[in-house]
Image (cartoon, rainbow, N blue to C red; front, side):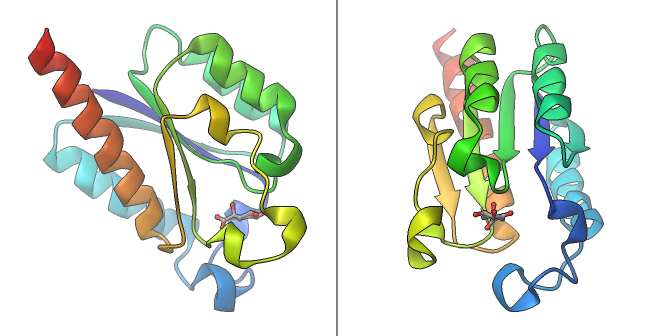
Length: 149
Ligand code: DQA
């Protein structure tokens, strides 16, 4: 199984960015945990972080024919990233949206996700483990589909 992992704007600053909200793990540490889990389950990851919506969109387009699924933390793009949403809809791969924090427990303006409607589901509020739970969910769905033939 191949999974495209996307980290949106400002997630490169994890570790020092508002650690009381996002924790102290760096993006490299989170990616290492995901790689560890993936290796143990025969999953190949392509991991991309960008502060630019277009780079994330290009990565989604390029994942066609390679990726079986997409794991995405869109950062603040969940609030207004319509082009990102349409890229996910266009490639029609199973996707899971993840957030470190529980956006529903935060500011009112943060509660909207324009990404969620084109995803299988959303996992949020579990810190770096949101990513792992999202990856596990995509893997389980993939296994289930494979078993059904
Ligand atoms: C975030 C939540 C977003 O609202 C915020 O803009 C981020 C991080 C999270 O992982 O909790 O950049 O996606």
